[in-house]
Amino acid sequence: MAAVKVTTVSGLAEDAPAEFDDVDGTDIVLVHTEGEIFAIGALCSHAEVPMVDGEVEDCSLECYMHGSMFDLRTGAPLSLPATEPIPVYPVTIDDDDVLVDVANPIPYKES
Image (cartoon, rainbow, N blue to C red):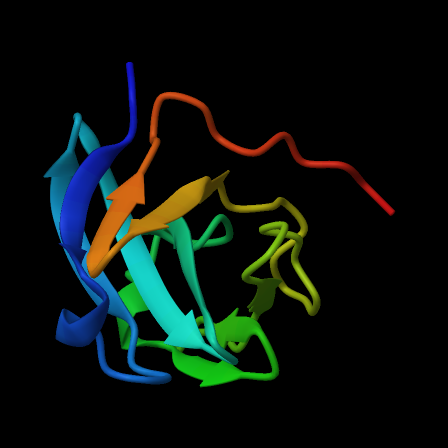
């Protein structure tokens, strides 16, 4: 399956997570920060808490419930209590359109 249009760049506020439900069957959160747009899974890997309610800081997103931080580029957990990554999806910008390919998540590589 190919990338699908989810929203527009101009429709995303800087450093404000935005949730989009049922993007080809997958719920995602888009984050526009540091000049890039990132697509991640909608739920924290620790307690399935909505990531849309989290705070953006230094290319990471914090889960509001227990404070776990996740790298927006890789999905890697950066702090406890989360120990598992969250999915990250490829994003393409076409003019003002934000396209996301949820069928091909970016493989997680432990560092």
